[in-house]
Amino acid sequence: MATLSGVGIGTGVAAGPVARMADPLPAPANVPSTLAADAERARAHEALSAVAAELGARGERAGGLAQEVLEAQAMMAEDPSLIEEIDARLSAGRTAEWAVHDAFASFRDTLTALGGYLGERAADLDDVAQRVVARLRGVPAPGLPDPGHPFVLVARDLSPADTAVLDLRNVLALVTLDGGPTSHTAILAREKSIVAVVGVAEASALADGQTVIVDAAAGLVATDPSAADLADAADRARAHAATASSPPSPGALRDGTAIPLLANLGTPADAGAARALGAEGVGLFRTEFLFLSADAAPTVAAQQAEYERLLAGFPGMKVVVRLLDAGADKPLPFLNDADEENPALGVRGLRALRAHEGILRDQLTALAQADAATRDRGEGADLWVMAPMVATVEETRYFTDLAREHGIRTAGVMVEIPAAALLADRLLAVADFASIGTNDLTQYTMAADRVLGAVAGYQDPWHPAVLRLVREVGAAGSAAGKPVGICGEAAADPLLALVLVGLGATSLSMAPAALAAVRALLTEHSFDDAKRVAETSLAAEDAASARAAARAAASIPASA
Ligand code: PEP
Ligand code: MG
Image (cartoon, rainbow, N blue to C red):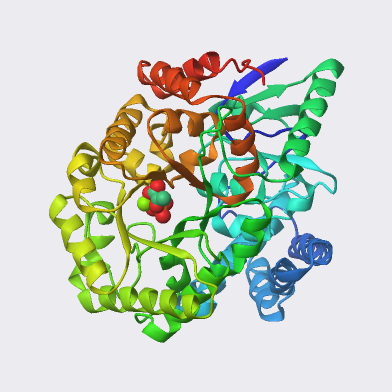
């Protein structure tokens, strides 16, 4: 059995045959055909009908939204005006491959020029063209595979469009060549509890049909396992499923130290599901997710309605709402300028809100009114409000003063910028609490864009430089007697969650699907263990050795 390593997402394990997502095909050359035009026409028409039939059949299997997308694509392959364009090129003596490619490309350009909804369909046309050309060439179609049985999906990375039509019922596990722990694939895997290992550079060597074991806890993909290896993986998968379905209890270490386990949410609609998984409240409500498609700033009334739903979903529990974090990977047209050369370093988060103080005041008003209204109805939560992307003590004072002026009782700051971590003692002299956003804290500590695959290797919160900054904030929190939460993706990695507790985190917030595995690992260790494991990680020189040192210190075998 050979093993390939990457970054595991979660703690699951799965085994099965590989199905690869093929890379895009190179464009066909514009050369004269050696066949008669009629023969090329027959080839082209056969390929178009076969692709239309296959897309239609896939749509029927998928159902729902995916069926609509796939049926629309099937119609593109049979569109009479497109077929006319293809035939015209074939009559001029071109190959079927080139005629299909070129006719689709001209339609694509027309759609792109129209913009809006039609412009967004241009990528769907490309996808259909690639499928037809692949059939003509007798090679696998690019895009998501559909082998008709459960499979381990191996891809360079998954785009949001891929994941929208990905039928998860047949996906046993995900393995990607690119991507780090905060990539789109990783977030999808965490949300849907899919076993995944990302950033496996050597996965390009995996072949369709080859059996692999994907071990997220160890961050490994094992190829050609023996029957005994497969039986062991099946046992571990069963044990993992039993942990995931065991009745939730409040988060605590073995010695009884309470570590509240909270949910990261982007919509109040997910409150029920989060509570069913044992969320003890909300540690990060990303308000910008509610308004990502809005052109204008939301009204106080529209916001208040959403916040009331959220607070009523967690009666009596802590709910930490983050003010609109606009900019970089989450731009909002009413808060950001489109033209910044480095938006991650630009006017984002609190900086953007401060530049539009009316919007900031409206949001605080909506939150305070939602708090009062839900309390009046006896369904109130314990509302905490925090500002994103805070860099200085002055910004902390500005935000907490304004929040209190609006009647917010508990006002805190996110620590996502190294400057804020290094001055955490001074920030916490002003703010009521801090919440560490490890996604951005890692991005800014390592100077590595969190959405750029080429630098994904740097985006690893296990890096001791990131851990040192967390330690600064943890120490400042315990000296000031103020809470320090974690709300970045790092809290969803059970072993890293233990390390973060050892560094002084007093609560952990994560995608609800990750709660069970984190809860299970915490109960196996005392607070003294957490501090000891954290010390060994801090002493390492890079992320991989910090992770390995923590595994050894927590007595987790390398293959578990
Ligand atoms: C973070 O940066 O870790 C965080 C929680 O915020 P977001 O991922 O929404 O930027
Ligand atoms: Mg952030």
